[in-house]
Image 1 (cartoon, rainbow, N blue to C red):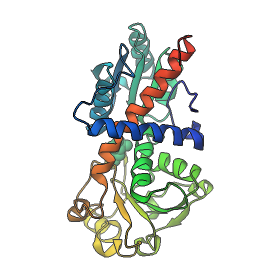
Image 2 (cartoon, rainbow, N blue to C red):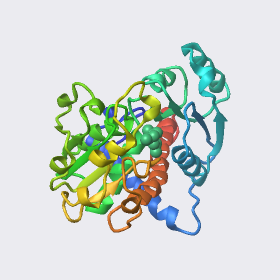
Image 3 (tube, rainbow, N blue to C red):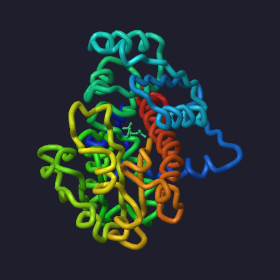
Image 4 (cartoon, helix red, strand yellow):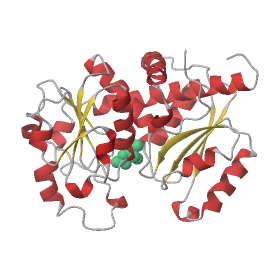
Length: 315
Ligand code: NCD
């Protein structure tokens, strides 16, 4: 088994075989999570602290459940975004926590790079639960597992990522992961929501849904992240939905068996039609949530094994 990292900070640090190792282990946890008795002991005796400096529903719940199912003591710290505007505050908080000897620190922060910085200051394993527009590695991994299960493979697929790409750490982590696994990636967004210099990532860029979705295997929709917008990026929600919102008519341009994904939370009627999102024949949005718990169990399990190995225990 290959996965030698101390932290999970971003997909950019992972090799193809490490991604596969993690997804394979996550498959075991999918099975465990579907059983009546859901307890494993991979994290028994360990302390997991969740520090979310930004609002989160599913990611925080998913990490909490993942830790508890593997036997960790899990603590959620309620962090107020307003109290962390200074860099020192973040480091101070980290040092205070560090003194309590946590083993796993799960961190979400509005600033890109904040989680990496924190990882340099503490002794425990740090998992990035989303930092600014930078990375959201467990989201990309759970998306990868969902795709692999639905399509039977994770390579040579044509995958469209659509919508607010400019503000999306989900898009960034997915572009890196799906690229490493040798897929063909298409980005579809209005020019105002397409990040500059994105061509360097080896992706195809479109501003028209009909063209971009043509014959793709996977359609990944993104939320319009208004909280990260400071100006007029889109004319109106209605106009946006008309041009970029995924509905059955636009989806008809994709392959007949193309799957529909969304990381949540969804703006129904803005980036996606509500009926389509709920259509279990096309939408795998609920599978994504299920895979999220399994992937986070696998990630924390692997990091805990590496931590034990570093401390001289049995890996
Ligand atoms: C995403 C995030 O926080 O980056 N959500 C999530 O983790 N499920 C995407 C989003 O907020 O739109």
